[in-house]
Length: 113
Image (cartoon, rainbow, N blue to C red; front, side):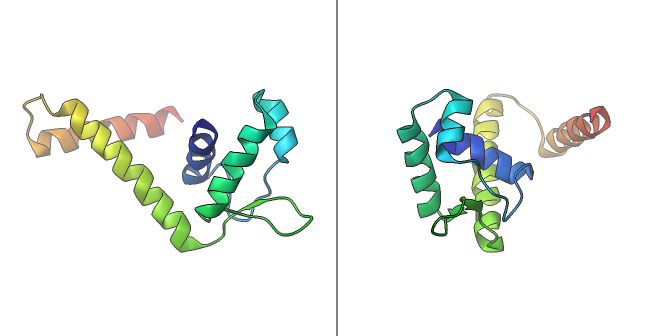
């Protein structure tokens, strides 16, 4: 799950581009210092979710399907929003004030980059 989460984050952030080749399972296991079987299971699951595709005797690649990528981003955002709303649930704040705080944080983060 952690390996899949790691790669999903790289995909939604654009650090991994559609069609980009993935490192080999063995390389990745060495790089992350985990069992190659763990990497194999993560790759298999990501292939089932159509996030990766593998052609015979070629490296796995990130999907180029815009619908799959759009769905991944939507799922990522829905999860983040759900966690955020749960965290702020006890706070008494109007939606307008909350949106202003979010806009300010996003603006600050963009300036810091």
